[in-house]
Image (cartoon, rainbow over all chains, first blue to last red; front, side, top):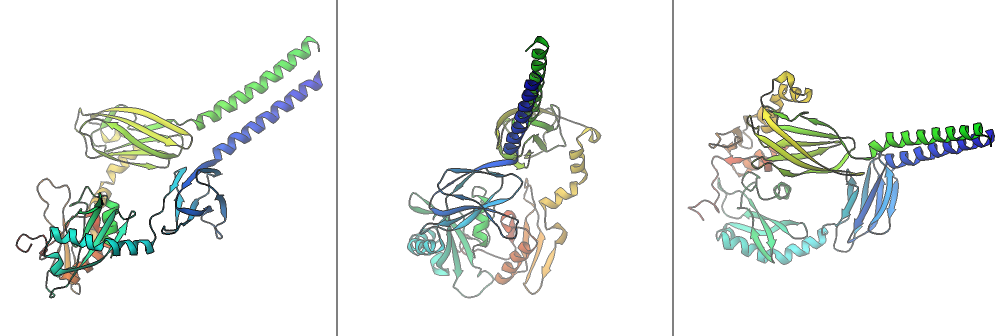
Length: 205
Length: 220
């Protein structure tokens, strides 16, 4: 009987140890679920180390991996044709969705294609824009949703010959002006435009 | 197995079960998302307090305000295990501030309702964090006017000069006025603002001499 008691005690003790181990594992790790489109070669890389080892390879969209909560990670991915490659730092989110923006090459082609209608939208609102400014460059983001046009002054140098920028948004296949042409576009004047978009427009060129 | 042996087995088994239960109970609390503290702690929101901080027992993935009393504006942020709600402005005595917040950690989600009534509270009765915040009020001014320490700024090679201008009636912040400038000077002025670690996007910038040829009524 004494033998049985010892066995029960050992089994109980082992059960406690295993239980604590399991609880500790779940408490010290975070489950990251990575979903992605238009990308391949998706990897989770450990940050803040000299060699940045690969912590996990995500073979298919929606895969979940459990990694130590005490370490820092980022997801690196290679964009499919026409899409940009990049990285996403795994900060707090345990569900990460990767939907990369267009690649520079695709944007270059898209800007060339869209410039005539962008120019028309600007000169329709500001007829003098086509006369005083050259409008043949700009920057695009969010898969062609936003465009900031660089209005380069082409008249005589004067105290008002500043280059300007104007933000446009593509809505239902048409370009709409979201700001007036100005030297700097601010949240004070355009509170309805996301600050990230305005900030990007101000630093695009 | 006699009765004593049986009792001993039962006692040992019971002990093991008790130990496991205690461990599970002890650790379970860290697995379920809970609020550990709220600042302000009671139902009184000091009229001098603009932030409400809700602290949880787990690091948050996300948190948001799902409903708020009418007329109350706010911004919110998540920092580690805390959800910080900053009211758009200080509230008057008697104002009721009801909030429903939703917080998410890797272990789950928690919806909570907080209710406060604004009242005057002496500084010494406010939380330590709020006392520190109010004592460092000048830091708040620097946040609103991040260039204040370096303004006015004049660059004769730009050329440009930058200073704060007069605010419009009811305006919450003073505009930054760029004057004595040329087109090159204005670019240099904006670059100087950036060099001070300030994004010009967030500032009300005006130009003394510049007339926009596209938007000025006479030229358009």
